[in-house]
Length: 116
Image (cartoon, rainbow, N blue to C red; front, side, top):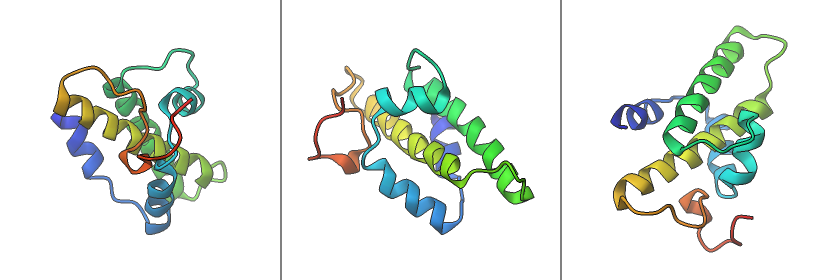
């Protein structure tokens, strides 16, 4: 798990992407958003989700740097938002070593309406 945390913490992206991801992470809901982003029926465990999101993000970043026509900044921000949310969920799990909290959004979303 430490490898996952170090990979996430070593990400360096342009300020506009990082800021958009930080702001979007406030409303991240893993049940709703992760299915759509990963295109899967079952929501994977946080560690598996982070690894898949890291792979997706790496491909998107390579496309961004290459200036590919198919690159979508919106998709890139969505993946970064999910990555931040899943890393926070994984971090919370590793700290408490208990059941996952009901609201699995990014900690910045505390006080907001519960995740559907």
